Image 1 (spheres, rainbow, N blue to C red):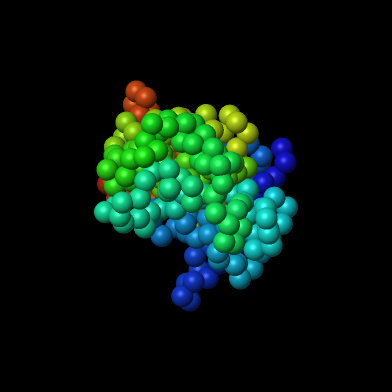
Image 2 (image 1 turned 60 degrees about the vertical axis):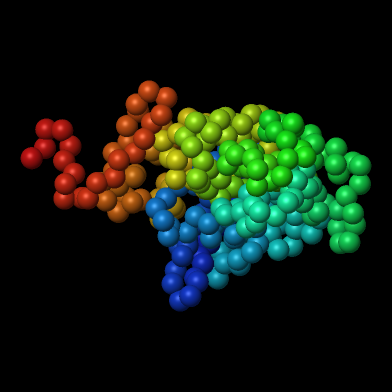
Length: 265
């Protein structure tokens, strides 16, 4: 499988603290990979390194075979959905105008969107199921619909790689499951997806691989291989149990002293 993202012995220090420590991993073309770990584990920093917003103090990063800060026009091949959307929901901007922002990277400096850009934006909206919301004001639609609008913005440039940072924060569980199913279908179109999330149980149903990070890369592999009690305990620094309950697997984390396996004293 052709590599899209490659990290080799990547170390990052911010504010005098080591945030990432010796990360080595590869994301192959067309893969759907989830990055999980506790708060402060370095997950968002990892995405920023891949985007070229943070340069590692040590190690090598390549996206499409190049350093991310040397991508040039290939940068338009990356779609990004950040963790928090700094959008003033009281500002009367239409959904179509938000999605059109995803075309700016491909347009270049001081060029206005043309008819082809509007078509691309509308196609992205249709793909994510909000084609009927083009003229709605962004602050008047639901959280789940806004989530899809921001994904459409990332898709408007027709990227080969999409990076998402906690895209379902603040969205109800039903909408989250629908969103992950949508990402799975987008992957089916040949798009590589790398997503940071806390929804380790639900997302394991959709992704090809899970990368467990707590400063270091604890493990990287198929969900059924890596989402185990032992890996979760190492990653979260405490005892963690993973349960399969119906269609919504979930994780329970408890203080180490209170943790006892069945039959133990």
